Image (cartoon, rainbow, N blue to C red; front, side, top):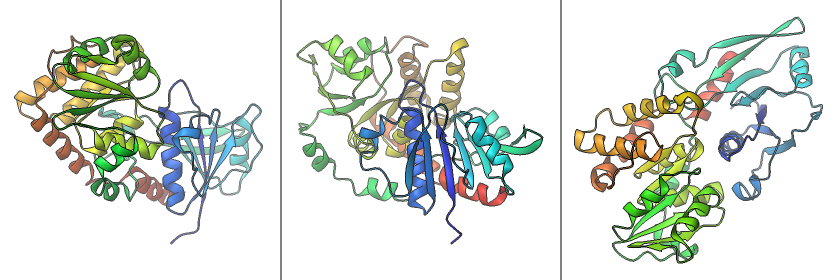
Length: 355
């Protein structure tokens, strides 16, 4: 085993939990594999519930202005293109052996990912050239893959669904489907609640926009037809993973929960972060084209319609896709993704090769 490296992971929290969620999972995974990580973050408040026990090998650095004047480690990772502080970059250039510099990009299924993954970008720092390299998560062999801890699938296989639900105080009668809801503000939610009310359903709404909208639409009884809802507390990342494992259908948003829903192998619907000019629609179709490449028309058409309706790109259908074929599709998709090396494994190899 090689010498333990020090990593500086930079994360700027914008307006949701996805950026810090991804940065924390990466940092914790690196530490579990023997690396030392300093996670620089400008707002660590979400980690109080996301990772209440912390992680041995990960230390938090409060990213203030001016930033702490620390000596750079062996590897610098800027999550989603957030530039490290200028003084820190200067100290990187001053080192006799500059650290490996990685730009961890956003996840996409678009074709440019394979073309761009691993490309260098020269950076002139007061006359000394550094090289930043782009690292693209993705769904194909030509990408960096997806975050997946080595023990994740073993934990998934031994998961005690009924026991975990009891710990949350949830009883699910036979025949009642269980659905998780994690979303941004979404005008399609009113229509979805009507659809879900057609059959016995327990909707588990996560804190934030999902819970707020559910309360507003269902009123104090939190019921409509065959639908009843429960408002969940904030769950740590490990608890959220288990929520996805426990449910029959998962509505997820952003990047982190999107990836975790795929590892769950359960039917899921993704609300992509809206972008100006409709760029999010292109990204959504690119993923659906991959997911549904081998699906028959009886599933592909209804599933694409639900995803587009949930993302306000088309009317929301009045029914959900057939559960059996939908579940088989998601299990098969997960199994194909498991054939790829995970992102952290690829990152460790990439750094060892390029530094």
